[in-house]
Image (tube, rainbow, N blue to C red; front, top):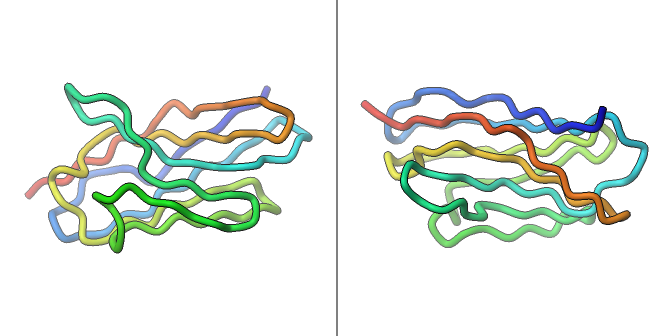
Length: 116
């Protein structure tokens, strides 16, 4: 079964840090881009960070300088290091894997709550 599994979410105080992980499994095909998206209560899902197979990255303006996306191609895993977290970062964070063969997978999400 092809799937993405996120982990690392939780409750953290403002100013704190979290590291999310997302592991892809079940497919022999190579992954092109990997992304993190988030959806806050009452809002649309938005792209947070994007990384290509070659390591090029892009970030939403709201997280630039605070979040870092990275990936381990050998293990089909993508990470999101989140620092200086703010209450407005509270959301369900979803991982997305876009394969070279056109397959597009989403994880089920992991909840991140920033609150004192």
